[in-house]
Length: 194
Image 1 (cartoon, rainbow, N blue to C red):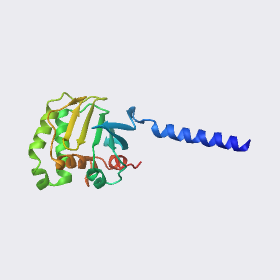
Image 2: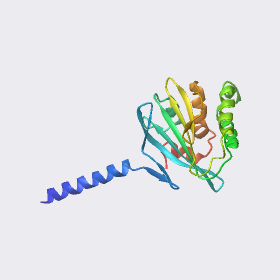
Image 3: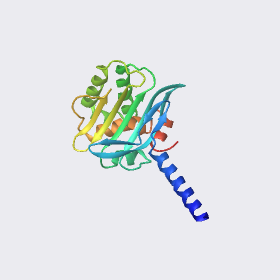
Image 4: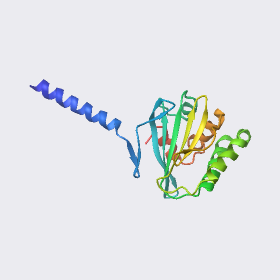
């Protein structure tokens, strides 16, 4: 009888743990699914967190990878598709967001490295400048698709041709994961920390 109780308790605990792992993560009302599919590959939520500016919550970001990564090098050098999804928590001018992304690339890559990416930076600035302000709940995604390049999706619409250079995707990821990240706590969270 005790064995059956033990077995039921063990199975119940295992089932509860499995359900907890499969449940989406919710941060400030933003639900991030535990998986995402890019190029037919199932990616897993590596980490997620909030970007703060002073005391204000700006957005929630989630990083999806095929296998767990705890360092920026592991993220950018990992083979296969990747996704970063950003959900706004407050309204932000899209043109200003494009400028902030460019500045984040410069801060983390250096002017010499970024100078090689100028055509992509100009195009990315144009993509965001063409948008209306991003309001709470609006999303943009950056996908890396091997053999295709980086795709930027804003409010569910893919924005033009892919950015083919792998260096461009790396520069984008450094905005959040580089030595001068947009937010240190968000960097830690995206890399699987708390």
